[in-house]
Length: 351
Image (cartoon, rainbow, N blue to C red; front, side, top):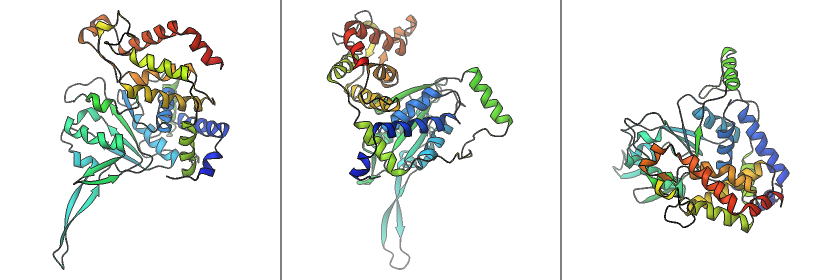
């Protein structure tokens, strides 16, 4: 997806924010009770990353991806991860072709279902580690290598992966290397009572959105504008003092770092790496654009800290007995950071 430099310059902040807000509104009008997930998904897409969604079945995760693909005019694919799934079932394989006349033999690459713009990796933790590893190159390099040949994936390319937090039998926890490839880890909550009532009312009126069957409201983002939006997101400014806060925030998650809270150190196994800081910058820029801000503010960083960090931090086994969760740990290190740098945090809101 290419756009000329002139088209990039035409996308000012007001136009970009208006388009993104319209996209969020359109998706939110048919996905009830998941405003946080919708926002994080859009920010992740604008940042060029991938998202891991953890939640119970039936909370519109699959429908969300289908609606986003339709509103963006992008191709969509789904892979149902199972224990017997093989890497070739995802990325594709080479097939031997024999010409009937000459008898000449040649191998032809047959692309797998991953060759789409938006791919839903449903229940990704049900596949074996070998199969899960097949996603690593695709998620990091937007390409796959089969038989020594490199095959590039469509652009843009984004993985929406889901996992069920309530079942452990027959599952394989995602390795840390793959978890780190996800820009965000979003928790999909049950809808509020009013939102759930809307879902029931839509079903009663036969308007409930189903997989592959929803009402097209006429809005579809033009392809050149998608590239312009992504480019405009990268132009959002972030001040050096906020980079310092991000750096300290990430380093505070590491038990061996002097910035880590002394009381929390024994409860940690390991913390976030440098990719966490890079991810936090990217997604904070997207969230700032969504809020019609030309500059990243501390509140943008604070809002995105949990989905960026929660899958990059591992607590020690005994921590769970103390009722400490990763999210509570993140809240604590943010509070510590704000106490150390109260002037910077407050000043970043007014600048």
